[in-house]
Amino acid sequence: MPDGNRRALATTLDPRYGFRHLDPLPAKADVHAFFADEYYALIADRQQAADIARALHGGEDAERQRRWMRATLHADIAETITAHANGMRVLEIGCGLGDLLLDLEAKGCDVAGIEISPIAAREAQKRGLIVHQGAFEDLAETVLAAERYVAILFI
Image 1 (spheres, rainbow, N blue to C red):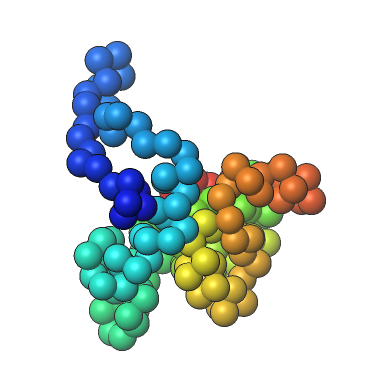
Image 2: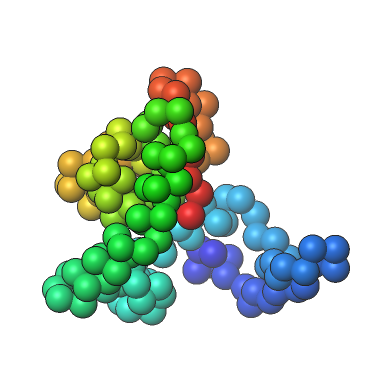
């Protein structure tokens, strides 16, 4: 959450479904501010998300990670879309740097993304991807009204 509003976060076990969630839940504005303004700065400093930090910094480790993701998770997603979707238009919410979108595009999908972080959105756009920068809740109506998608991914 934004530095001035940051508080200790704890998790609690949901008694009905058994998953853990933040308690108390942060306000939507705080979550948006964190991911839009702070998250990628923390990643660049290698304080969060080692996988994304590796991708941002590039090099052989980043390429090895991309190859592994392409051969595993991304291949499974592409196979599911091509086998079960009626078309190939895909929107990824929280697309980050765009690795999944690039891999889906290479499999013949027509892709776009929504990314709240201006840093990540800019990097994905530099890679030739259509990425709408902002919060999904703020962009959903206009992005989804402009195009029809056979799959919308939240990963």
